[in-house]
Image (cartoon, rainbow, N blue to C red):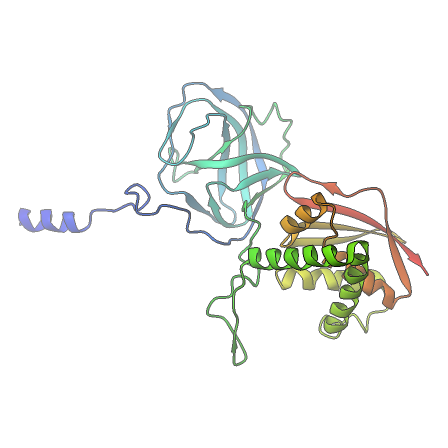
Length: 326
């Protein structure tokens, strides 16, 4: 009987693939942003914590669960490591769950407070601790955190599972969707506008605005902006389409005055190439702006930017536009 038990025990031995080195790089290619709020503030720093981070690089955070947030500045902090210098920020209640992965960026409001270095399960099942890597070890009290502040955990790659890019094995009617790597789209647009500028120089701007008009004519029936009588609603429908098709990770349109609109955009897929073109003195595609101008043309309006774009730490860009009747 003991021999049988011993045999069964061997067969049931847990093989942790991360600990065994069977997984050499992160298998995550896309995932949803996790959202929550602070429910408790901590004011504690431990210099000899001896926190042993688990080997797996990810943990599921379910809706209404609560996790602890701590920070370290130890450079080699990571899965399987022991971390000593730890500051405690507080506890976060999950409002919109998902999978947290090492390397994810963590934000409180618009401020990035650190990058996930690993997970500690000392106090599980009561809660797990998300250990962040930051420049400075601090506490929630020192940061001036307040209960109710919003938090976000987002992928460093800017690709979300609610994007149509997560489309393998999906079908639409009789057709099968094909996933396209955002890098391919970005490099293609970069190459096209690089070549156009070399041939046309500043006349490239004519291509930008004309392309916006052509694209808008192709989609206006689908996004139902033709029937809209109010420009702000038309711009909201355009923004929703840009997110739905995977051009942008997230986008918000706010009516901040009777004649002003604010765009908040997160990680358009052509951003890397657009930045390169601008740095080279060339003209980028400006797809969303060109589409916005095409929409406003339908209402016999144009737009002028108010101030300059604000670039937030999490990759969001905030633009304010004044709408002018022609």
